[in-house]
Image 1 (cartoon, rainbow, N blue to C red):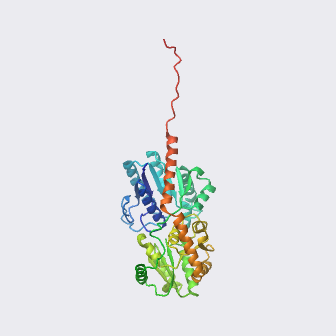
Image 2 (cartoon, rainbow, N blue to C red):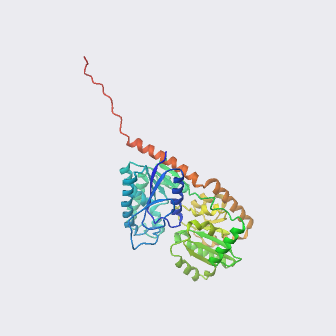
Length: 418
């Protein structure tokens, strides 16, 4: 049975980074299964083909994407709540699917209004993200109220889906989500588009042209990264590792793709004397990402967060790239034995592990092949959306059972009949 799904995204969708990729690919996969999906999101961001997007009211002084925690979200979420209410009254959704806790807070009153289950697509802890971004400290007076709100939203959602099994395990230990309402739906990847470089003349010409456009000299081995640029993403440590590795291997080049503010990281690379071996092109359009990743000899995932997903790793794996990551539970879950792990937060060890993979061609080939096989077997979006459909069905059944009127007891009239 097809459903009408109201998806809420408290973000500047679409902006070419991990959480947005999950929203986009999830929405496409849901639509391919025959469901109607309407997405309510902020006023800014790119429109995506084939997706019914309803945006909140315009805020003329904010045109750039709002990434991570920001004081601007206080009024942006008010605008989104108004838009979500109007859309909900118009389309009468069967399912409310909220990405992030802020979106779940907006969906909570709609859950009752529409008598529709609220699905929280858990991308990580809201308060942990605020700590990671330096938006709050644990001593801030708002920290405890926000932690309580986060726990309340976890409890009130009809189902909580996580992008990793690690996040599901953390929530089980936390006790804020009943086990029967908690489901892991790992990030997927389009393995047809993201696939290893095949050596064909056409692809070789495209790679050469793109490499020239980026100004990467011939003869350099390339380490690729895609994602947000921020300390908690490990961007600073990655450039520190580049300085260490380049002192021994001047034939290496780092292609560090993403946003926001690549200018400050260019300045940081220049201050370390490695600007000529580090290219920061800024935001890469998602539809072109596979072409850029195909330039890489090795991929790197230096994310520091212990609660958020790490969807970029799935893209690396599908491309058949040997991948070096910091040793976090999430990275180990996604990569398994197909990855190389550096000590968390250690730039020197990250440099050493990158050098190991660059030097050992047999190891690199073995890791890349294993990663590609794992991506094809386990990380398709079609597989993920079948899990989502089952979760929708369970949540609908539970909500209908809770809200169904109690049967009226039958009392026989004791008056004798003549």
